[in-house]
Image (cartoon, rainbow, N blue to C red; front, side, top):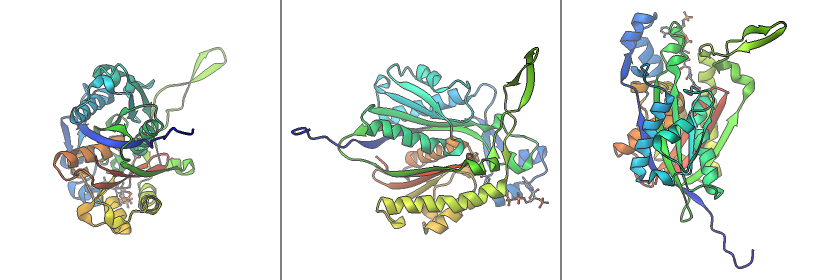
Length: 335
Ligand code: ACO
């Protein structure tokens, strides 16, 4: 390669967007459905209300709206987008919803696909898209996190139905050879603990003809061991972020914002405490939206970017965690 100077390709963060459905389900209203109270939900989770998709909404529509606002912030010509990654566990079409978003956007030069990793989905999607940019294959990418868990919640199970809501968020990222604002990442899964939180298929055996049986499609509702998921999150998330900070030579004092998957305020507080990151640096909007699964991180980031909390060059430590079990962390510099 004599004479050829290869330039390192980095990632730049150019825009954010989000969308939530109009219908608001407050704790007071949920208390009319299951035996719970505003006081119980707020004190155990920090959640006051969540958004619920009406029959006209779906992941494709929500993801499209979030992506469009991120593209507008980035000020991109839509035809210059190369890649669209949609992180979702609740696609409108099980064969993939990302191509429908691509078509609705008119992103005719992009390739689009879905990625499933529950509440870690956005983080995993961001890492995936970044690798395509760093590898030099693509220049511009949209990463969307969108979920409609209201369709899979057992609305008679007070242990889980209080937690979840619907929404979407997106980031626009671009390859650049001037700097690299994707400072580092780590990702883990442990299927051995997967039964703590899952959304299994219904396992309905049916028969086609004679002795040829098959499993008919369809999913049951979210099954969750809340205490185990809680213990998993408060143990693993500080470890993965701490290791990432060490690996990238950053200290927790240099982190401007901790943007965690918005599952439970007590998890956010506990992780912040373990990392010695003060409460005013821990972004939270779960009071308004509950746990929107793959959407929480970009939904939170978009809100903080638009109200000028996250500013150019701010250092953000982010972590997604949840079903799989799966978890991951990324350290980024905004801009
Ligand atoms: N209202 C009133 N009482 C309730 C409710 C409710 N909504 N839910 C449970 N209880 C009761 C239980 O029945 C139990 O009563 P009992 O002692 O008489 O049996 C009591 O409250 C305590 O129940 P716990 O399950 O021990 O409550 P806990 O303090 O652990 O809080 C919670 C439950 C909020 C679910 C908590 O465990 C948690 O947040 N876990 C993490 C869950 C999570 O974040 N999941 C999503 C991960 S992301 C993803 O991938 C989708």
